[in-house]
Each structure stands twice: as C-alpha cells, then as structure tokens.
Image 1: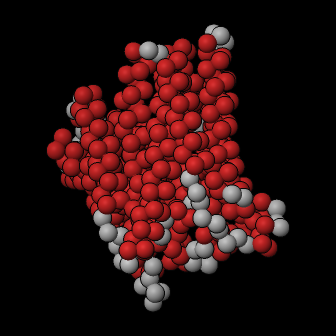
Image 2: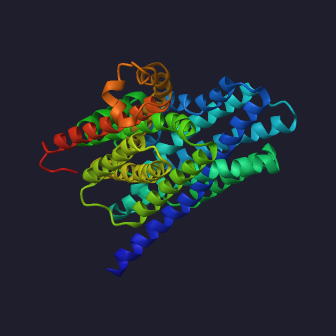
Image 3: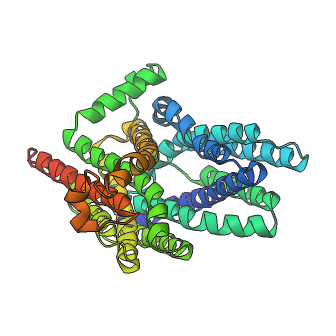
Length: 429
C-alpha cells in the first residue's frame, strides 16, 4: 500500500513540475498576445487591425489540427512539446529583435501570431495526451483540473499584468517575460520523464492525415462519448456568444466599472471552479458530471437574461464561469479513460479544433443576430415583443437579454437530449 501511494505521489509530482512550466508559459504568451493587440490598435487606431491579431491567433490552429494530433500519437510527446515551445519562443525572439530595431510592423505580428498558433496547435494535444503517461487513472481528474486552472490563471492574470507592464515599461519587458517563461517551459518539459506509450504500429505506417482519420473513426465508435462531446462544443459556442454580448448588455444597463467588476468576478469564478475540480474526489459517473455542469451553466445564462441587475449578473457570472472547468475537466478525463492513450493526441486535437470553431462561430454570429435580428425584433411592434416582452421588458438591452435566455434554453434542451441518449447504453461512462 505504501508503495502504491509513493508511486502515485511521484507521478503527480512529475506532472506538477511539467504543469508549473506550461502554466508560466501560457500566462506569458497570453500577456504578450493581449499587449500586442493593444499596441497594434494604439499604432493604427483600426479595429480591423486589432481583429486580425485575434484572428491570426486562432485560424492557423484550425487548419493544422488534422495533422497536429497525429504528431503527438506517432512521435514522442515530450519531444513534440519541446519543439513546439522552441518554435514559439523563437518567433517571440524575432519580434524582440524587430521591435528593438524599430522595424516592427503589423504584418510581422500577424506572421508571428500564426507561427505561435501553429506551434500551440501541435503542443496542446501532446500535453493533454501526456496525462496518462505521468499520473495514474485515479489522478486524471486532478491533473485535468490543474490544466483548466492554467487557463483560468492566464485569462485572469494576462490582461491585469499585461496592461500594467505595458504602461510601466512597454513592450520590451513583456517580450522578455514571455521568453523567460518559454525557457521555463522548456526546462521543465526536458527534465520530466514520460512513461512509454503502447503505440499502434499499423497506424505509424500511414500518412499523418490518414492516421488522424483512423483515430477519429475510433472515436466515433463510442456514441456516448460523442454525445457528451457535442455538448462541450455547444458550450464553446455559447461561451463565444456570451463574450461578445456581455459588454453591450452591461453597458446598456449599468456602467464601465460594473463591466470590469463582473468580468473580474467571472475570472475568479473560473479560478475557483478550477481549484475545486482539481482538489475534489473525481465523480463516479463522469458523463453525468459533465451534464450537470452544463445544466447549471445554462441556468446561469437564463438568469443573466431574465434578471440583469448587478446582483443577478454577479451570481450568473460566478456560477457560469465556475462550471466551465467542471465540464471540461470531466470531459477530458472521460476521453482518457474511454480511449487508449495511443489515440489521445488525435482525439484531443479534433475536439480542440471543433471547440475553437464553435467559439469563433459564437463570436461572429452573436453580434450579427443582436444587431439585425433580436434587437430590432424587441422594439415597439417588433415580432418577438409579444412573446418575450412580459419576461424581459422593453428596453435597449431586451434583444440581448432574449439571446441569453435562448442560449440557456438551447443548452438545457441539448443536455436533456444527451441524457436521453446516454440511457440507451447500459454501461454509461
């Protein structure tokens, strides 16, 4: 018994060393991305230029996703992470050199962002798939929870530190911090021992794309897992929509300081949820835990649209963002326990690409529907006013409130549909 505990401790310690380096690198990269967006906007004053900074951070990762996951399943995941971090670090060094010479222009930032996105697309599936190589099944949920904590810390700290350093010392110090965190990630990854993976020799003989397709076909043979994954993808679409809609909703009803307060509360809620899911005992039924997290998050969306007072929005923000790590962590653990480790890189790459696509569609569609559908339809004599006017009233924010409510109701219905589908399988995951 003591030997088993010692092995578990050693495995978790190995993961914590790797996690520490990757978390630092994630915060540094997020801080640089935030600062570069602000710098480009300050230099040119064009929203389209700022949007391109965000776009080049996401689109390249979608394009390379079919090959990225297969790399981690075919080659050493540690080596894939080292090479990816090295490429990303070199792109940042190039920006430092250009900036110091006074030659940095927008297209170079777009190119560096694209290179970083490609490197991150290769690094993340290998990192996520390495969890079973570092810790035992009993620790999968805690390790995945810590990875969600990294995302929460990056989301919360990057704008805070990035804006402070940008005002205090400018871009050079931000670039330097980013390079130092890349170095930390390389050091911890290089010194961490990964357990070997039982690989598919037949798949190794296939081209990368065919190997990726073979892994995805195996994923589709698990209908319960596919159903739960569809709910995670819908959750990302809702998250993208909310990120666009929350600002006009709060500014129409409250103030700019109120918006900052609510966004901070959301970050703290995500941080608290990540810490909780990494400390709590893993649930016995992972799929049910995902469904419960998505259901509670959907109710928070309905609450935000129905009662958009500061109290209602504060409760909704904390609850919604606290549920995101619970859903994502248990879903990742579900993949790790239902599928062989040799497939994890490809499956995580597929899920990440679909989730990023859903997030982007949420960004794009939310503003369009707010401006051209729901807001006009909730004006006097609008077609939706008789159906929703009694619920949200008639005010400039009514259309956006309806969007929040409908997104929540859609998630509730989708969750119910997934729950019914899971009842068809006697051995639910």
